[in-house]
Amino acid sequence: MRRASSMVHGAWVLACAGTTAEYVEATCVSHMPATPSDLFAFLDRLGIAHQTVTHPALFTVEQSRALRGTIPGGHTKNLFLRDKKGALFLVSAVEDAVIELKSLHRRLAASGRFSFGAAELMREMLGIEPGAVTPFAAINDTGRRVTVVLDAAMMRHPTLNFHPLVNTMTTSIAAADLLRFLAATGHEARIEAMTEQKTAAKH
Image 1 (cartoon, rainbow, N blue to C red):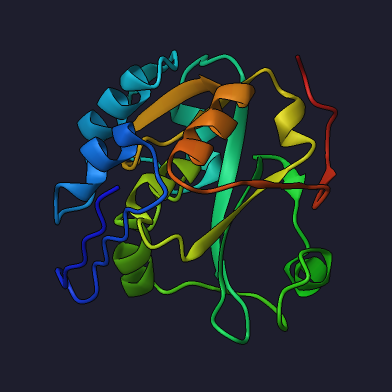
Image 2: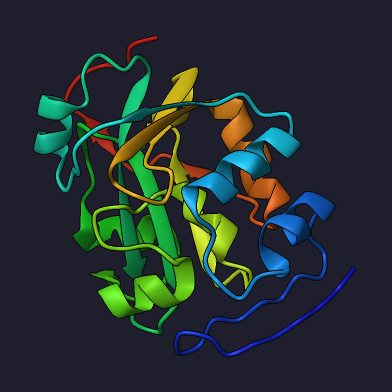
């Protein structure tokens, strides 16, 4: 399978060996981050059902609750983190989960406490803007620098909702299909018990 590398927008790296043909078609023939349309086309080629709702830009969980309407399924919050040695993590959990950042590094066997990844690093590694953090951004992590970690409680929801690379849309996808998508991008997601929930998951 084709391997390519290029320096675009600072350090945009394409490293496509070992990924699916669909992934190469979606990302590795372009030097630009994937768009929502690219993402949807990629999901379609994988045979993954998805549904998307457009809404005003959302930057916080509180805004999401107020403006997203009655979209069914588990709603999420997503964090882009780096440890003391610079290892990168994308952590996803249900929106009302309590994530203890001071101790999370121990749960995930990271090197020292986590801090939030800078906006510039987010753009470089994931091709997204702050407020749009999502596991769907794995489509842009062609160098597989980012470890995707999914909270076990979140994965008990049959359907999950994430931004499709921008925060003006919400895309619904089956939890099992999220794992299929991540695997197709070369990311074997870690499912970890990371959080305490304020309320029980609803199915």
